[in-house]
Amino acid sequence: MTVVALLSVAPVREGSMAGEVAKAVDTLDDFDVSYETNPMGTVIEAEDVGELFAAAQAAHEAVDGDRVSTVLKVDDKRASEGSASEKVDAVERELGRAASDSPAE
Image (cartoon, rainbow, N blue to C red; front, side, top):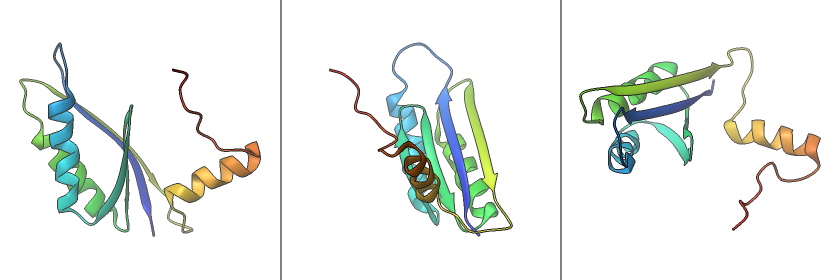
């Protein structure tokens, strides 16, 4: 079984949060998960929901601040297998093109 989640962890404050977000992302290497960071969060994939929750908790705890905001959206598809990349592939087949477009510069 593959569990896929979208994780967003950040301190609640003014100014750049990149350093604290980097700490959260760095902790994911300590767990048996794969991940991809994007501008809105980090997509995490694990074979076990417990491992995914442990990784999310560690990421949350890695961020310093008086207030930390964490959003976790979990897709625990129990009846069948499926990876995050397979979900994107299915959308791209429907589109007939890549689902991503490079931003205009």
